[in-house]
Image 1: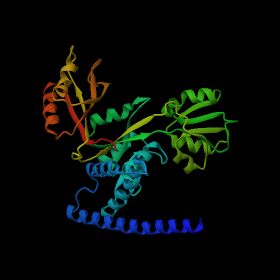
Image 2 (image 1 turned 180 degrees about the horizontal axis):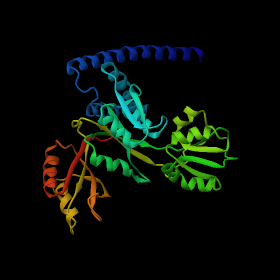
Image 3 (image 1 turned 60 degrees about the horizontal axis):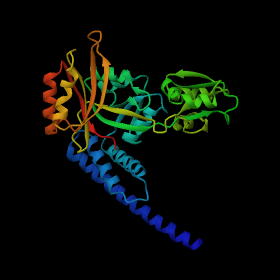
Image 4 (image 1 turned 45 degrees about the vertical axis):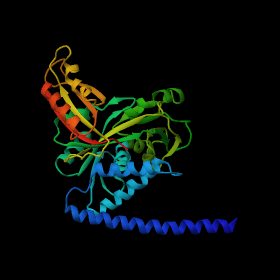
Length: 354
């Protein structure tokens, strides 16, 4: 048995050396690409999406596709950093789900800039203080993030990517078990996402909404009678024990984040286009507005209404459609929609989340 283990470990060591050599060869090629580009954009979301799709589709296992995606995202992140450093603003502080989304999209080899608010994320990218921004836009159980939608209407920034993050809520505290918990801190949305679990297991504990889950963990670290609902990273940062895992009421709870940049993303072959529209306040106006998509065989996968600032009972519509704005069918449909709209703004075309 010991001899067999030694042989297997020797094979692993040999493969590790091959992997290291191949990774460095890849890094040299990435540097060469950077020289050829001559200082143009170092982050190409469409190219990275194509790489990840190709590799997950070619994956024969036993590694699951998510592990393959994570490994190669980090490889691309490290290679990208050899060309030029990249900064990404996110809704802070450190330890939030927004930071987790930024890491999932860009890897660890970027400078992460925590912002105090969604407004500040937009501002940092608009003013060039950050290369990109990551902001939440909707949750599968709690719906749209209104502030993000409002700012998308005003910003000159482009949506150049999306991140789907499975939200796993953990109950954490300084001590062990549930006994003695009198207060539970968390962001209001996280408290809502764990409402039924908290009713069953901590019905007498006061629920205190705070600005972020990371702040909730910080407060719980100072109070032995308190717990926090947050992500695993927050527990690690603040030295808390996770006393109950995955307490969200909906096991498929997912938050969608948008990546903001100053440049459009190119077509990747599997894309979405997001836009904001408004129509005259008359019967059938919305149907007339979106009918060109159906006529051109373009799928419409999201429609969100928001009150317009222009007057009472007037609305704008946030819409996601299949395809890139440069696709011939999409471009034709968008031209027809623009002719019928009183407000028309393409927020961006970008790769579908891998």
